[in-house]
Length: 200
Image 1 (tube, one colour):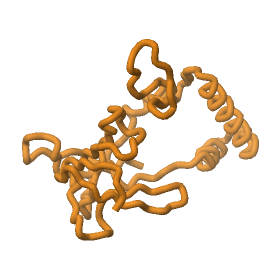
Image 2 (cartoon, one colour):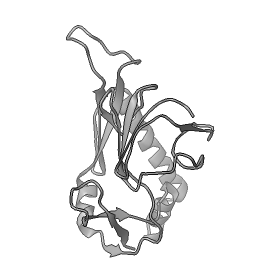
Image 3 (cartoon, helix red, strand yellow):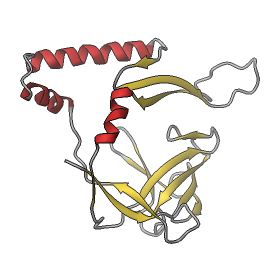
Image 4 (cartoon, one colour):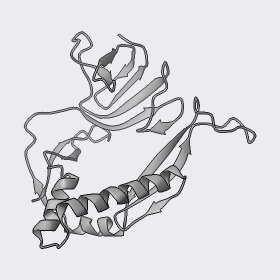
């Protein structure tokens, strides 16, 4: 299999003829499929044994992170950091103003796998909005949380929409799948949307 990608206009540069690559329509492999692949290669480990070991590994990683540790494996590196503004050197962590974030990077073996990825260029059939970065302008955090009632920025491509159409816009989707449409737009351009947290 190859990594499929297409090209779309890049609205984040000054050159109107610039394009950017967009990865598209690639398969997602689950833990069970990975185990099936292991067994298919002649492993003496059974599927049940493999799933049990993976679950124990997952538990150990989660436990290590929950105890505030960095985790460094051949596949990935995880380390915690803090976001939010501390008003002075006497300030302390406050869940209403600060948050803990997890940073995830490829480990040595995954990084080496990049060199083996084959690419296949495909035509993108329909233009779709592309979100590249979400920024909470109050906390300055990127691709994390959103401060209710504050201004946030979404950058990407093909983001402009018709505000008169209730099916278009910016929606927050809750855990129960309920949708909240935001209506207070501050800026609306193909490459960036600025909005506050007011509901429609």
